[in-house]
Image 1 (cartoon, rainbow, N blue to C red):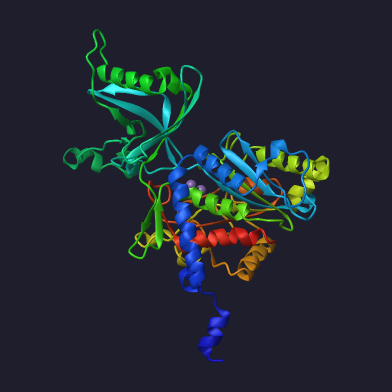
Image 2: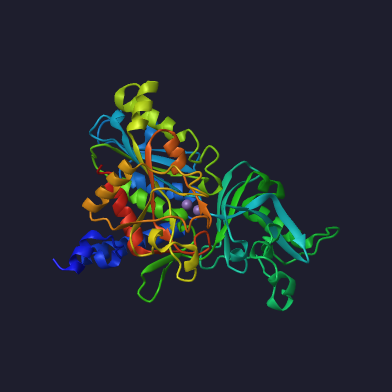
Amino acid sequence: MTDKELFDSLAYERKNAYLEMSAAEKAEMDSFCDDYRVFLDNGKTERECIKLSVKAAQEAGFVDLAGIDELKPGDKVYKVNRGKSIFMAVIGKEDIRKGINIAGAHIDSPRLDLKQNPLYESTDMTLLKTHYYGGIKKYQWTAVPLAIHGVIYNTSGEKLEIVLGEKEDDPVFVITDLLPHLAKDQMTKKMTEGIEGENLNVLIGGMPIEAEGVKEKVKFSILKLLNARYGITEKSFQSAELEIVPAQKAKNVGLDESFIGAYGQDDRVCAYTTLRAVLEEEMPQRTAAAILVDKEEIGSMGNTGAKSAFMTMTIAELIEKACGGCSVTDLNRTIENSACMSSDVSAAVDPNYLSVSEANNSAYAGCGVTIVKYTGARGKSDSSDANAEFVYEIGKLMDEDGVIWQTGELGKVDQGGGGTIAQYVANLNMDVIDCGVPVLSMHSPFEVTAKSDVYMAYRAYRAFYKR
Ligand code: MN
Ligand code: MN
């Protein structure tokens, strides 16, 4: 053995997934990513992602858990929570109380929500006031085409689903920004202050109508239009959930089309790969499950977020229907014996901003799915920090299944940090590890992922269900 060979056998070297894949794998990757782009274009809100997931689940033979009294191995079920989160499971051959393999991802993404009284007129224009959701860089949301998605009740009490700005001939909406010529003061501000939250107002109209005694003639014309088209009044906005998202469709990026650029890849890239993995399960040894949750971007709060009791309640229901009953001990044992892949994106090293990453311990676009032992900030605070035993087990599973993976950490120590749903799952007394796709321009209107990593995430979740 030469010294070079010995060194190679002793040292660890990150691999580029593209170099490791066979032609067949590359072909599978391409078709997988084509499907993924369609999912991104049709799932721009948490509600839309749940609808797409239910449709795909039903096509794969999954049925609503509510309609099932008894579960047996091979049964495929799902349960939707308030249209914003979903739990899917394929019952395994083994007693469910021996534990469930759960992959979890979130389907909410940073965006702008309409305020409850959003409509106002200024300078002969009508605008919508917003309150941003999640961690955005506000300047990225101005001067780009925007769409409106969500639900609103009309005056007859019907819930309407709105998607405006996505079809080729739909109008789009926009937040205007100051011209450079008059931006002397703005340009000297800190980036956090250059665009203020209260200035994220969306332009929706500018054609006044003649109206005797009405001062706000543009607002009047928009109200008339909204009423004629949707049967809503200004008060209807108060209960609505309308989200402003980029109108841009998902695209291949690069001359070699090695990347995907799209809004909402955090965390729909992990949601879609998780979904595809669980839908392909047939008669697993251990029960295979997937949960897609809402509200991660604002702290996993609320009854549709990861901190909600929805998951444990659904697990209890599965045990009850699979075992003819579920004691507190049954539930506790099942959770203790279960394991979770907390599937969320990681930060890919950006060649334009190398200084924020530490070269040895960061994720690289193209180098496969990222396994993240711990997240957190300021000395691992708020991290669940997976146990060595579990990290070893997962790494071995990936290697045995030919999954190209890397480890990753969110930037340099004390550069910032973050966390995801892993800690809440870990608190239930379950083994959990973060695992996901490295993303460039995270939380921007056009996030970028490498196709090889998207495909390897899917392969990782498939491998996880074999444990
Ligand atoms: Mn995320
Ligand atoms: Mn995020």
